[in-house]
Image (cartoon, rainbow, N blue to C red):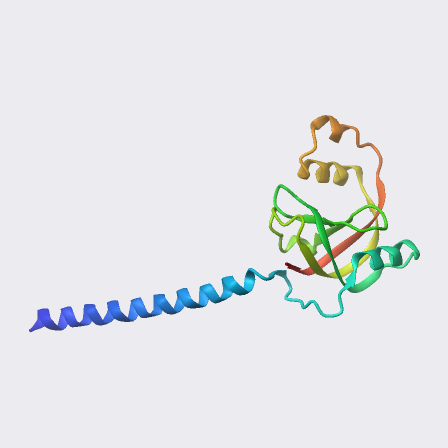
Length: 167
């Protein structure tokens, strides 16, 4: 009798475990199908009211004022090949806009160049140090000779994102 109870209990546990596993697989596939449309990084943001990157770059170039909070969209030009700790967004107004992530709290996939991004955060004027320029060049896979040629800081525009959507 004890064998039958043990066998029944084992079968019941197995059936419940299989059912929970099937439910988890179904929810995982739903998340995957939704994330194939868009992936979210950092703070969860929406695409609503995002302005083209060219507009933000023009506003920054024509003013000495930083923009405390703005949502921007554009095509990803390049990504840090080391960790995905920065990306640049192409624009028609000048140099690509470099996006970093607040407190390095999140990274983006290293293979997302060419995709569209929506990102929210702070746009600002920046003086990039020689050490940081060399780090960016290293992350971008530049040769040692190219890195050693960097000797002057660079005045540029920057963006610190709190959240990113990649489509």
